[in-house]
Structures are given as C-alpha cells and as structure tokens.
Amino acid sequence: MTEGAPLKGERLQKFLAARGWGSRRELEQWIAAGQIRVNGRSASLGDRVLPGDRITMDRRTVRVEADARPARRIIVYNKPEGEVVSRTDPEGRPTVFERLPVLKKGRWVAVGRLDLNTSGLLLLTTDGELANRLMHPSRAVEREYAVRVLGEVDRSQLDRLRAGVELEDGPAHFERINDAGGQGANRWFHAVIVEGRNREVRRLWEAVGVRVSRLIRLRYGPVMLSRRLARGRWRELEPRERTALLDMAGLPKEVSERTRARRPRRAPAGKGRRR
Image (cartoon, rainbow, N blue to C red; front, side, top):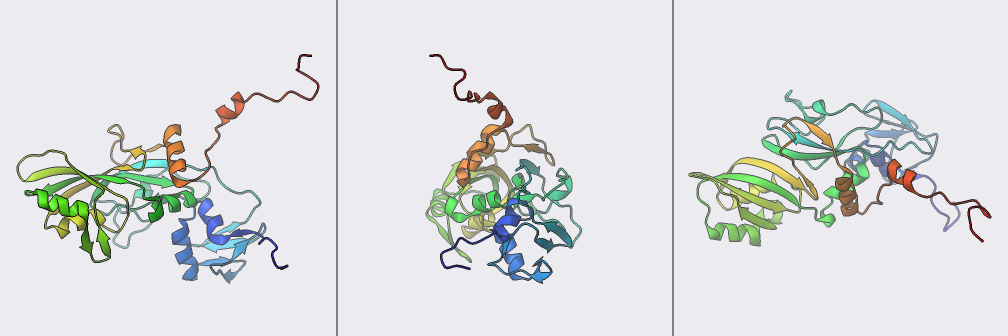
C-alpha cells in the first residue's frame, strides 16, 4: 500500500456492529477470543472487510456487500423480574430475546443490561454502533431507577451516596436522589446514575448499609418507561425519541420517507421560473 493512501474497506467490528451482530465492545472481545473468522481464517482486531468477503460467527455466515445495512430499529422492552438479558442461559431461565420480534437480518443488541431481579426499561436496537455509543462512559447517559429499600434512611446516608462511596471496582455515586414516598419499612427513592457497571445501583445502597428490595429502571437518556407498556411487552420508539437518542449518541439525524416526500423538487434548468 502506498504511504499515505486511504485504507480500503471497513473495520470488521464496525461493519458487524452496524448490522446488529453486537456492540463494538462485544465484537472486539469475540475477535480477540478467535470466535470470528473472515474468509476461513481467524480475524484480528485490525482487520478490514471488502465486498465479497465472507464472515463467520456463531455458525452464521454473512457475505460482505457494498450496501447491506438493514434499516435501524430501536425498541423499548418492559423487562419483568426473572428474565435474563442474554441469548441463552445455562440454567434454562427465560431470556428477554424470546419475546422480541423476529428479524430477517441482523439481531437485537441490548443497550446495557438489567440483572435477573431488576425490571423496567430496556432499550434494544439493530444498530450495534448506536448501542456502543449509548453505553460508553464518555457519553454520561443518565439512567433513572425507582428503588424500594428496607428500613430507615437518614440524611447522612443520602449525602454519602451523592458525594461518592468506594466500591470494589472504584468510586461511584448517584447524580441525584429524590424521596418518592412509602410507608413503614418500605421507602421509595428515585436515583440517577450515568454509568452502567454491574449491579451498580444495588451495590451503592449496600455500601451505606441499606438493602434494596425492588429495583425498576424508569428511564434511559431521553426515553421513559410508559405505564401503558405492560411487562413483557415491547414497542418501537417514536420519531421524537429516536431523534433525541441519535442526537445524544452523536449520530446523524434520520430523514423519514414522509419528509423526503414533502421536500420540493428542484425545477429543471430554464423551466419553472418567471422572467
């Protein structure tokens, strides 16, 4: 290759992420583990693919085409407790993917995870690049939870949670905590974090001696969990939600077919003009 010449092809993990094979982070891990092959050989992290190349992963094969990106879909799923955010589970527990619409191309990528005993809003998309950006710590996307705790919580504990506590994987804190009522031993709070570490909300409360008895995700960025969406059901994002989410991820806005139809056609040269 001539020095300074542009690199040909598209990075393997970027190509696969855009077509819903996973988030870029997941794909990079799979490439490093030798789980993806290109034209019969194990892929490397620096590999690029060109039209005609053949990619194999999970016993599935896809041939690279010049323009093979499926239409981007984004849905909200109201996850019940007892489901895992995984395609398969060794213990045979139900997974969220069993209830999602079947795709002809690509596959659903979860934007973050919810643990087995956490319910509420889960975003899923066929665009792995979008998922990767929304999960990346640099975006600081807010996640809001309704938290039911057992027992009394005093001001000093709330102050510590806002200021930050030390967890086994580093310091963490809530951006905001608001009292949401409750009676007796059960108190409700609404808490906001901007990271997605494993069981972070539960571990924060445990660090100040408080046990969480119920946890529901209410919001991810600009997308809210609606009361009209029953548990175990999903819905497509509305146009305004899609626009806000893409803007937050730093991706170009979409142009709908309706918008294209409304655009005035440019008159041919020398016609349609008054002299």
